[in-house]
Image (cartoon, rainbow, N blue to C red; front, side, top):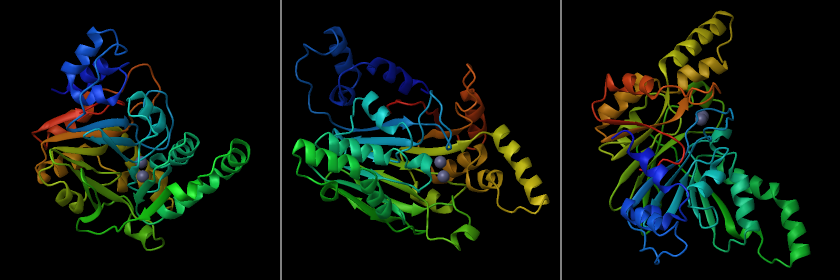
Length: 348
Ligand SMILES: [Zn+2]
Ligand SMILES: [Zn+2]
């Protein structure tokens, strides 16, 4: 079962679009048999809810095997984005979703490994003649970030309006919305296919929150057929356990034990030298090790855990991938349900 997503991904690689993807393996096989889709009968309307992992690497490094944090949830063919780290736009294209039709995005927090492709996404949407609004929801600072993305593309906008006769300005299309970060789940979005609630997680320590307005949240995306909870970055969080209660998929970040212990030692050394705040301290204090993930999954009674934002993930840049078994064994000590180690472009 753990490899189901990988097999589907391999099957779907090279197919022409999400309509086929959403229609399931039978439709995909039919298209393959017809030579890749060019001569295929029109695909049936895509139905159901899919989770597509676009980026599974944890942290702000860049490697070529895994993109930074990003997920798509596709409901009856309509995509919704959660986080937009570096590589998200490329992964949207690789997954057959594309970026032109994406109208709704949710950001868990404003660390750049969750946001840095947003400016690219919006700018490329505008240049690609998107005519419908794109709304981006996230905690404090999100609205200002979208205004800044519009400022980033000003040269491109001015040149093309002057030179190409375009009339729509990005300010008319792109809107950022700051959402509440509360202990109890708050509904932040609802349309005819999806309801999204958010709750504050524990990615920012109290001493940092006392000095800034920025907050970090997890999301629950509920369609008619599926509930998908995306942790964002977080340490163990009671709020997240409540948000994830009984969910079909608990998409959770993880830092594997050896990496956690390395950072723990470095943090202790920094504290001994009088430095309370360090990168190592941030890592051990505000992320989830194997036991944290298992405990939250067990307490919430979720059906399936999907591990993402992997640390170390592919950061070591060796030819051998970090073994899935290491993450899984740690989580399984506490959680008896299904555990899937995420890969970019996995479809679940
Ligand atoms: Zn992160
Ligand atoms: Zn973060």
